[in-house]
Length: 319
Image (cartoon, rainbow, N blue to C red; front, side, top):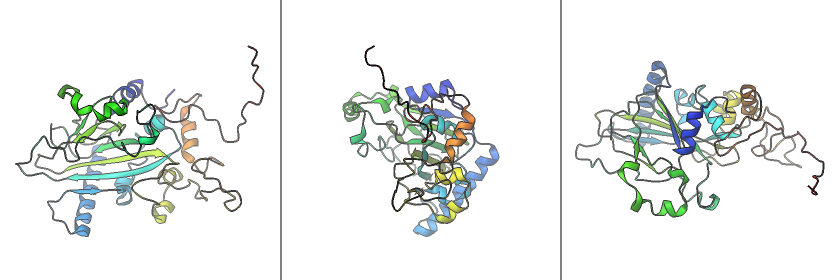
């Protein structure tokens, strides 16, 4: 039983690979993020020696502004993320996408990054019968208006996360215009999605900057891609749950456990106590009765603890 996700949202994630939440941010939250993205874009242009007309892309953006950081554990989104992939998670990366208007002669059919599946080569050895696994879960935040067709909107092929390796190789010969979904949402909207969907982004042919953020969540035993270790000062001033999501121990302890010299054990894999991974207790308190059924393809269906014994009675093989 999910504690936040609706049956409709779960079905959409499992069938199409994404679910949309329009106007999930309040007007004041949207305005705060809008101004924050302007500030960060101006800062990066100065650092990089760019002009005011240049677009800005940035990784690990949660470390650049408090308004962006607050999205990491947003109270309306974090329960849905935990429902999707469980509690043993952290942030993988946070992409800052600030797209300036492009010249009028820009070809509207040319996608900025082309059609692609995220991690296709990286996940090549971890597929399930050729299908890419759910090892990363992404939340897209649309800070500016993205309701105009073809104006820096994201395109998807629903269900393509289930394609086999052969289907991913030959998709161009089979794809038809009717198979493509264009996400058109107002400012302050969000989308939960599987980044192993075939997708691309149209050029910004509007008259205004298009602002979006993409925050990824992955199991804690995977290495992040936008950072190696977050700023210790950022970790120190964060709540326990936020520390976990930022890639540290929630209790501030040693990642190799209480005896790192003679018995090192990675607490990204094995948890000595729930203080080191506070999202577990947070999820249990909200889930109610078990089984919790966390994970649309990854995650725990039970809150069995590390110290809970396995049944030790031999199974009768005569029956």
